[in-house]
Image (cartoon, rainbow, N blue to C red):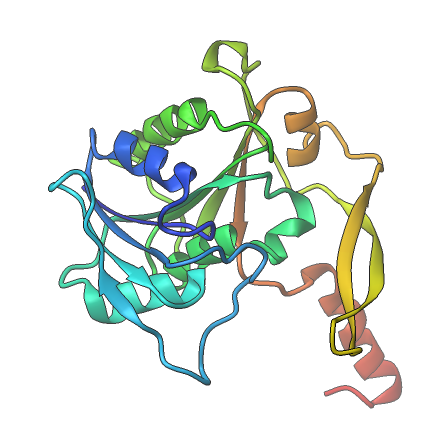
Length: 257
């Protein structure tokens, strides 16, 4: 099995190091990751300036890869379309430091890198450690490795991926695994107005999560319970429940066709 490993925290981040060191035990690893921190870039791609690509030397000669001067989506796109001679069997993005739950997946560079793999028809996993403070990625890396093993016999539907969040702490303190749906996280956004040394005004964005109710079958609830969440997602954003209603508008007023 050949795995393309990527992330949004940058190629030198401890999370991707823990991931590649664990996955190399079960697969051939190729890395294509951003040169620098690219969190919260979503699925942005670089179109107005060059994307610099440099081969990257790892401390293990069995691992090869590139440092990409672009976004997480850039990294996967250029690796699959240009850099790799053979397509990988799987794309794994992470391990992100911090959760990627609920609607935050739309902002996440980690998830978007996995989405890019799925858009190329390759099964993909995004994996995150649900803590900004914990430096221990071992449990997340071990679980991801066990999940990857299941891809040797199991398959995902085309254009789908798995979004995995692992609670902080050692593996023996994790209370289980839940297959979940996306929950809901709302933010009370604040933009602090500041002035630079030249007298120009700028704003610094901060957001505070607003505690809301999430049902027991959501990813948010699973993490709150100390459980690993596995959420199958895809990038078809069509609201199918609204289709018939909109068609009804068409029949009633003739303004939608």
